[in-house]
Length: 199
Image (cartoon, rainbow, N blue to C red):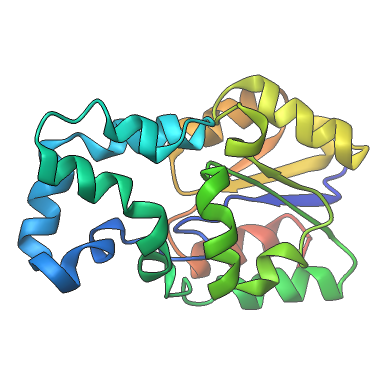
């Protein structure tokens, strides 16, 4: 079956995400990275991507200063997503211009999505179907989140090419029948799309 749609991840594929920048203006970049490691921010953030709230997650942090920092994260979130991944947006718009459907599945907290779109308003407009994990209570690479996208977009998995910077998410998409591209940069993605006849 011919691929008719490109399904994008967003973080570090279209929008750069640098969580340490939430706290670095006040405590410095090294201290921010140390804080992230100390509380296992990656694990807590993934739970937020699945629908939990940062204020609730912060209650699990023992140190009161660290607890306050994590609870403040949504209010500081705009600092973390200021950059765009070089070249990716050009590819997205080139695809749209050729008539390829553009959709997205992102692991992103429901409470930080709105601040993210304040910085990048296009995120709320550019995709035909957008699945935000924190709104759905599902996170990649759960097969259910890929099937949800297909159902809402009216596509079969075989009609989709999924693009993500994390290999385990690409593997999850492939497991339900999507084609997959492991994103390591815009040049490699563009080459793949040309070879597939999409650009």
